[in-house]
Length: 271
Image (tube, rainbow, N blue to C red; front, side, top):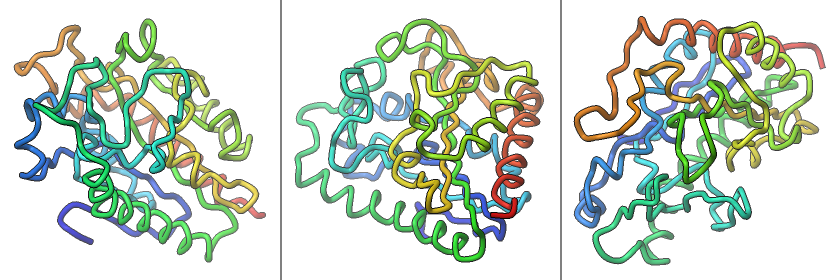
């Protein structure tokens, strides 16, 4: 649809969104950053590639190639925290997950944040909303699956190591219990650890679009990087991000394909 917004329209009632896989840093923003490597440090590395089978299953996929450092399309646009009382990053982040400053001097002004929201946030979500409406007009149920990853250990955000697979439904409010149960059943049978509504309960996408009473069911999957990448213990310019290996990622891809298949089965069940 544009040079930064990529929409593949599928015909089945599943939308897979990729809000944090982008690595584009517009020139005017790059100049104000301490380093591009630091700005891209918290990217959901290779997640769109990890799910590259989704379109072949008939799903719609929506991806922004703009980095989350420019604007995080999975944050509440009002600026309200999704996790009150817990450390998180902003609509236009000013630090990395580790608390390192991103900008050389001043943080983005309110005017600059509004500009970025108009340029990137609003078009991204207009596309998600349009695809939800298109598929909802054809099906009684539509599933929005928000795909993420994060380093296994980020002490500033959480203690210890995350489970491999972190399911978020905002306490069971964003999708039917049958859907979350189906996803949990697949995770239980897999070699990967999982939790539902642990540290990550679903971001703005999941909470905004998840309206089960209106036939729209949203679920977030946050993958700990070690489940599909050779994740180093100490990050550096030399080792981060690690390359994507089809062989290393294959076991988890099989599980994720089964999860998307379960989402499609759920969405196509008679109302």
